[in-house]
Amino acid sequence: MANLNLHLVGSFFIVSLCLLVPLASSTSTDVNYCNKKTAYAVNVGGLDISPYPISRGVETTFQIAASTDKAISGGQLVIDVYLFGWHVTTEKHDLCEETSCPVSPGDFVIAHTQELPGYTPPGSYSLKMTLKDADGKELTCISFDFSIWFAASEGVAAS
Image (cartoon, rainbow, N blue to C red; front, side, top):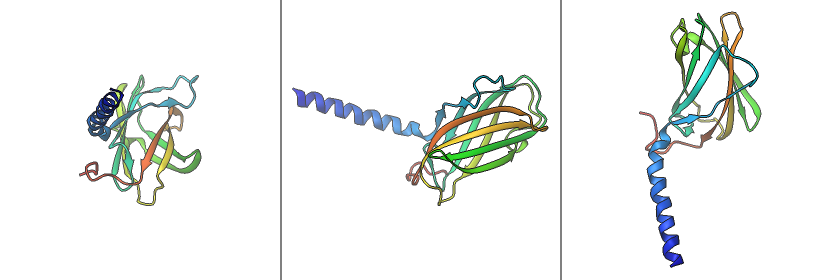
């Protein structure tokens, strides 16, 4: 009887895993504000990474849902990337290349697409993103964790 229960549990686990694998092509990721006590002018509602898991040589899109009470005419995204806690790189992007400018009060989306080079080491990463307005004033600052895998499987590669 114990073997039958173990077999049923194992079968249930395998079937559940097979149902979840197609959902792994995109993920909503938890974000944390850099300073929880700061009232940022831009509030971040969520982050979607697609495809997920992230693989070297595959174009990946980071899509950030945000909102603001004031118009933003332009600015800069500063992205700091860490691997196992060690600072790896800093990237700076024009806000108007990542979303439509001017940003009107209300909801908006910042989307950044990038293909990681083949020499990118796999592992656990964290990313800190600071959004600054045209005058250099910090509008928001978030961080989140993600992993980079060795390579994409045949079915996950971007078309």
